[in-house]
Length: 137
Image (cartoon, rainbow, N blue to C red):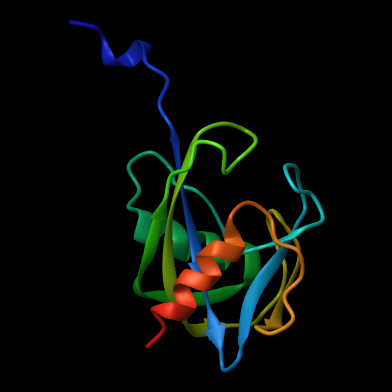
């Protein structure tokens, strides 16, 4: 039997989809990969952290907004979705419950975009947004 610690394992991230009327919240990436491109707010899940807690923490760190999870959009596991290596993301629909919008942490900017005129997006975030719109309440 092989020791599981010798295997390469994917890393886990959590991304948040926050709709406001016909707009969606995006952040401009401060760092590589995709530095300068727009993306959903989110980031790596810390050891011992639930993905739901990670997405709420990341939204606060990157956008200044206090949020709550409304539901699951999906799990995205294509090994090629992140140039840093195999990364699985759990994407959630998010609802704003407080805070003031501002950019912070890994975000150079944070703002709402009209769903009909989205910028070029990092990772597979365009697909995540399409899926979230299909599942939108």
